[in-house]
Image (cartoon, rainbow, N blue to C red; front, side, top):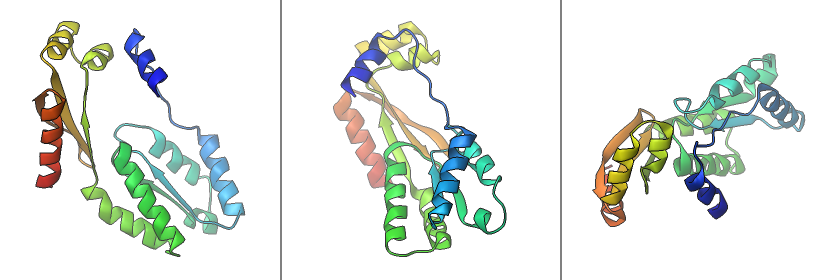
Length: 178
């Protein structure tokens, strides 16, 4: 990870990502079904990635009982909150829950899932073209740390903190408020 982040700082343009291919989803679904298992495919938010849409398209290639054994669930969040929801789904599966029970539980949890993030530097926002280079340099000079919350409703700007300590306090306050 350290090498990746050093590369980000040095890069003129930010790297991009892409969703797994239709073929990859279809193949994975088929393989899991052949092993006698149901499929609970959990994806990051469809607001930020095409992954959910591609997985849904792959699911639509199946019919009948096979199609009924595949669920594609948009977790409507990002990062560690996706991990928490995925761990809950795994726990339910290990406890013997049905696919319907897993999906129902996740859909009940999704509206409460939140991912808070602090931007340590504004340089990446400048590289993406969202703000100018002068704004980024000034923000970094004054140790401005934007804090945002990603949840099922989308991205919500929480505030601008002066330094990491204030940003962490802001995030903790947001958790306490929720």
